[in-house]
Amino acid sequence: MKILMVYPRYPDTFWSFRHALKFVSKKAPFPPLGLITVAPMLPGDWEKKLVDMNVSDLADRDIRWADYIFLSAMVVQRESVLEVIARAKKLGTKVIAGGPLFTTGHDEFEGVDHFVLGEAEASLPPFLADLAAGCPRPIYEAGIFPDISLTPVPDWSLLDINKYSSMSLQYSRGCPFDCEFCDIIVLNGHTPRTKSREQIIRELDSLYDHGWRGGLFMVDDNFIGNRKKLKGEILPAITGWLRRHKFPFVLSTEASINLADDPELMKMLVDAGFNRVFVGIETPNEESLVECNKGQNIKRDLMASVKEIHNHGLEVQGGFIVGFDSDPVSIFKNQINFIQNSGIVTAMVGLLNAPRGTRLYQRLKGENRLIQNNMSGDNTDGSMNFIPRMNPQTLVNGYKHILTTIYAPRQYYDRVMNFLAEYRPHRPKGKGPERLQSYQFKAFLKSLWLLGVKEKGRFEYWRFLVITFFKHPRHLPIGVYMAIYGYHFRKVVEKYVASPIKGRFSHQPTQNS
Image (tube, rainbow, N blue to C red; front, side, top):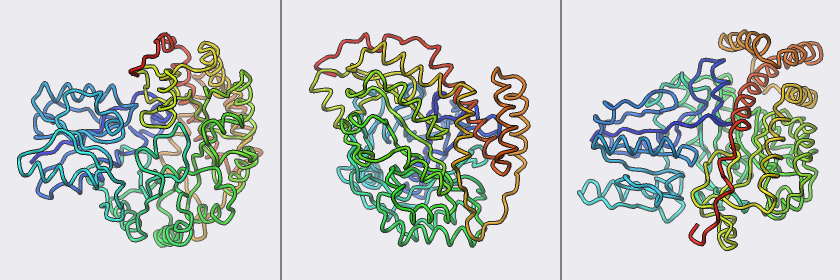
């Protein structure tokens, strides 16, 4: 059996980092971890190829070669998914589809021969058994959240790892919280399920043996969901492994804001080589936090929590949302002030959306406020799939004002300097001095030309470099990479702001949405 695993193309979005990756000659930020984890679950005598359309083109000869295409995707990849399905049908190759996009919306796709939904550890074995018997069904659903202690090590050999700026590793699935708008608990459940210490070490060994050196993103939606096991087993094991191998990886992850309440855990993360964490801040408006059941963010000083994490040596990347029913018109100014004063450099601000299956989706459906087929999956493109309480034009104009303000060169560089003033990096025990890599030096030279000569914000760039050199000289490499990220964010924002509303709120809600 010949299997072609296809990962569809991402559009140019906030998280694509497409404009920043050009500075370091990379094609994509992260690999398709789901597909390379599924690959070892397939029969060992099957031939397997992988095409990640974010790093290489999908050729017709690849499609013709395959007996089946295994297709996995997220909502934001929908347009590319439709293209792949159409091409496969035209060339007569069968399609097997799974992953988040199909798990919550498989009924929206025609031309797929078999859906394998939910987590593959539960849904893939019965499909493979029926396929071997010659009687595969159209749909297979997991029905359970499986034990992931038996999940295999990803097959890194399917990738050209040099085309990526970072690799990925998963430790746990599930989140203990119940935010109304979040589909993580729909896809992965409330109870965090974890891999064993031995599994994590095997995955680190495998990645190291395949030659990777650089960034490693722990993709868990809440890495600290099972804090006891993390502190008692996993972090000590990761720390020991990294010390023995002289810290070949620089780690980052996602966590909830209550990380700021645990100084011991923050120290352990930094000792293990973590330097960055994405946190869902959402909004400084307390009423909106109550509305969406973001309990972990309520009744706390969010600004102080962010600064506490910065002071422990972890850069906070923040997620923000506008469009809650409880949002006042002042929310746009308040979001800008919070982002600027907190020093959160990478601030992803999006309009609220209601993913299928979430409590928010069900509530809005009951209120007849959903807009059918109007969710792009891009958190920051200005689209919404429901009718907001606030005047739609006021909401979109306010949202665009946030983006154009926080990513304007002056405000962005000021925010970086605000962060550098708060940041207290800590060198893990056993880690040698940082050495400037050749690709980093090349990126710096490119930034001098593009940001310092060609871009309209060049004066602000030089001002930023000079101030950083004299006030925070040892943070200059961090400042340069943040300047490069800022270039990407500005390009994405320019595209969003220039695009018309496209009648996003002209649709009338329907009872069948």
